[in-house]
Image (tube, rainbow, N blue to C red):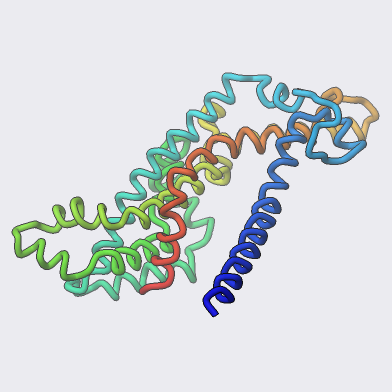
Length: 297
């Protein structure tokens, strides 16, 4: 009987391994196509389609994006600054809010939790938000306008609150108080230490949101030296599309033979490449933090 059970377990492991392998290949396949296309000549993509191995090797996509290297460096600098500062400050405020809202001795925790949750259902709208940031706060063309709107996300506050509640038992905080620890000591030495999976999960969400943000720049940034990377590349694509359409309408090539497809793929690699290095550092925390924070309440 034991041998039979061992055979079933071995078969189950083999099936699970095959399923995971096929799923991994399916997820990795589109990325490999993008990498290959970024090193493929534009005419080859249009003629032969996408291949895992470049049919005609070319760096024209990267040369188009990096034609003005100083602008790319400026865009990278702005994006890195907003991502690092925004993620750090966002983690500080979100963990503080989550810690306070999960405490049973906080009299108004349900009151404030309701209003935070309410904002996930109803919002003030784009126009009042724009007027507030430009007319009243006067944050146009500042780093603050790129950082402040994304600091406090209701979903992440709720996620962190639930995770801290499940990861930090009340008995631990009560014993710390008996030993003379104040709230800030408990927060810094106990809550943050026990909540690393949740912090890593929320930090990854924040970093991805700041890194992929282009909409904020399109609304509030007029200075081209302060464009975020995503918005800078977005403008390149728009300019190339405009020149192609104008050339097609007049019969005259305004921008030469612009490598639209290979440039798009090169942009995808330039944008996603650096942020991919962040995931391995938080991967071991990510699943645990997301599962516990979302399920337990």
